[in-house]
Length: 100
Image 1 (cartoon, helix red, strand yellow):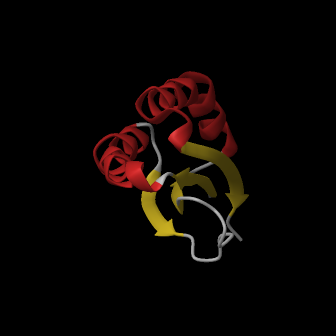
Image 2 (cartoon, rainbow, N blue to C red; image 1 turned 30 degrees about the vertical axis):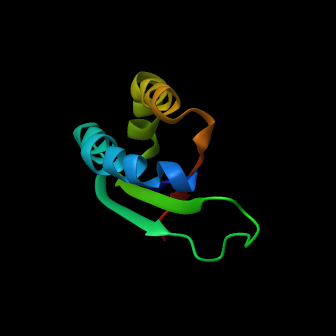
Image 3 (cartoon, helix red, strand yellow; image 1 turned 120 degrees about the vertical axis):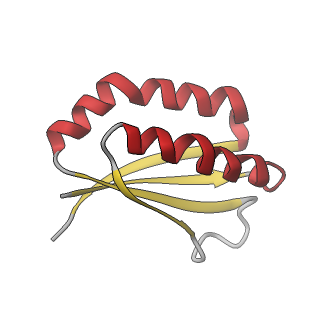
């Protein structure tokens, strides 16, 4: 089992629209793509001089093969949607972790 984690840095003025997008668009999209057990958490150890709020969003996925298929077929459209809606006011990076 893998954990697919995306960390977002959200500009304060975009936090409301972004969290709505997360709940209404992003999480349902990921669940429809085979991901499971969504979890979103505010990161409290972020740089105190950083502008905005950092949020980690995690999903579980069965294996690397399913993740690769999702990446090839769906990742670009999700990133494009994020960029169109929020531009540079929401930044993100993803990490894949293996559960022990």
